[in-house]
Image (cartoon, rainbow, N blue to C red; front, side, top):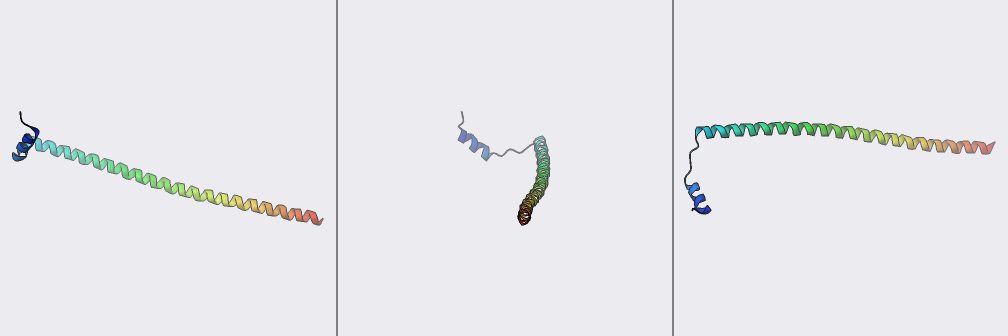
Amino acid sequence: MQTWTARRTHLNQTPRPLSTPQVDRYKQLLLKQRDIMLALTKRLNDRDEQILALQEELDAYDKYQARIRGAGLWLRVRAARREQVEAGLRERR
């Protein structure tokens, strides 16, 4: 029985030429692997584009909310000022 080290040494010393069917199989495997990688890359790029579009939409929504909050604050300040003016007018009467 050969030891693992002896077998490995033997395999490293005697290169075996690949037969044409083996080479063709490896080529097909590599082509399939390439196609899979291209498809995955395309899907990742599509997802990146979707994420960027959603981030832009979220930024626009946040700006809109900030404007609304700012307008709401302005309306509250204006209403408080109007109440002050009305209270001052009532006191003068």
